[in-house]
Length: 219
Length: 219
DNA sequence: CAAGAGTGTGACCGACCGGTCACATGACTA
DNA sequence: TAGTCATGTGACCGGTCGGTCACACTCTTG
Image 1 (cartoon, rainbow over the protein chains, first blue to last red):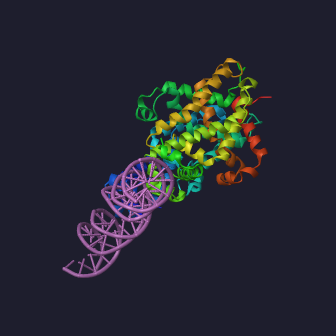
Image 2: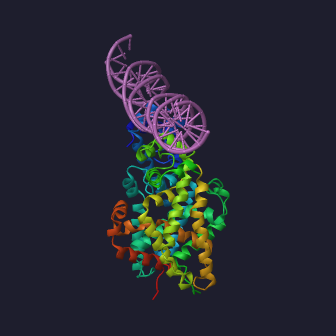
Image 3: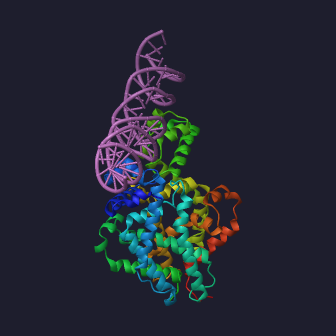
């Protein structure tokens, strides 16, 4: 945890430091991220930094928690429909909210999913527990509820289904540019001008395949 | 490309260097991977290393190509059924072969999918083109053929379907330990003793969901 | 004024980085 | 024997790293 001194800082100064740290950890692995670069970017002295944070890991885990909180708040404002309104209606809305978070906060997204995926964070299990594991647990409950309500096939294994759904949700951000044939950075930069209609169609496709599969002879 | 000098080395010496490099790049991001560590692990002089490779990037791209070649050869031995035998029969076999490669070569897998996913490789587009983009292109053709043969729904968007399939295939390795509730490293270490039957069931689930979706009221 | 607490500062530490280079070694040729 | 060439070697270069520390600068309290 950051020290009390850090929280005594003015909001703007604290935000400058956080922003610099987010940019650094988004663009470099945990190992390769540089404290020196962060303090020079934030225009604070190295000594000050170490009065705010115990060490690199302290900062990193704080950022992860902060990113999770920002995402939670973001999705809370999305006014998701209830799962009773239909599992796939709910799922589509959840995907969309998630995607919009990812587009609006690419740096956070990068941080949240770099950690648990690759071995260069020395405390990977810790990060995984805080991020992806939570999503999977939540989705498993949704799937179970969908099954209980008869909206989902009783034949499916809820564990496998939940993991597939969460994985696809995480990768959504990467789908869009590939399908649209544009560059990831371009997507992030042009976010307000990007073709919302095309994205909406991709989301429809996406949920449709999850619901009914790609097997033939339907309608 | 490595120099002629490198290829003049004895097979065993060359393999020692490659093994050390693979281990290093599997456990660290491109930036954080250390040439010093590789040469000390391989017990060669730093100067020798730079007679074999131009620089870090030269070694890294060589490893990527090498890993792709090893995977190609591995899957070629799997005797995959023809796609005419049924799209999902083929897909299941492809998934299984891929998973077995991932389990047998965890380090290669780590290298192949760290690069295109995260921004710490300074030439990410280059790596992406050599790896994931190729898989997607291949799978798109498979999907198109499946549609033409009437095995897949004509309603689906082949681009979206192909990306979903490839993404799920890549993530397969991570599914297994989560579903089985074990640690990833444990899975890799215990590979020969791992419950092949449980894995087979997960693969079945997996393909079934892709084929028929998770929507209700089937059979 | 003095004393003390809280905070800011950047030179400095030992370690390590990617990469270079002057030199050693040994096999082959003349 | 002397010369040539491919290869091996590790000390060394400038630079960066995470982290420390002695000191400076407020501000409050007496």
